[in-house]
Length: 97
Image 1 (spheres, rainbow, N blue to C red):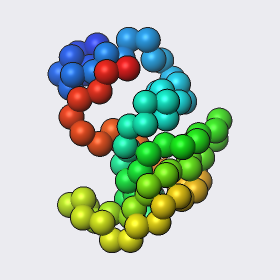
Image 2: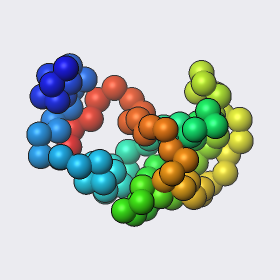
Image 3: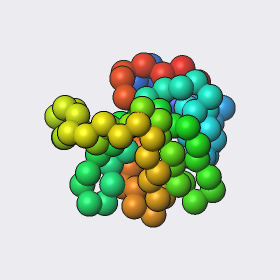
Image 4: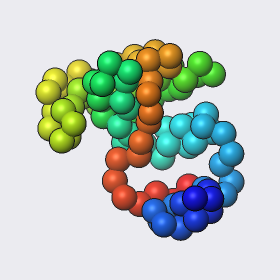
């Protein structure tokens, strides 16, 4: 599926964003909640507070969640090392960048 088709399908305008760090920076600016899945299969939800070139993240209002989305532990702020991240997903179904 091409990027433009993906964007239309999920209600996103992503034509101006070409790099993952640009997207994460924009998500930080907008205060949009993300889901981060780690290589150990744990999942965290929170708002991106900071991101660097190594994809290290600081999430604010973070919680570890089960696969069904129920919170396991609420942490507040967490640091996630970029090399441990499997994927990052936007929580919700609409996003306009």
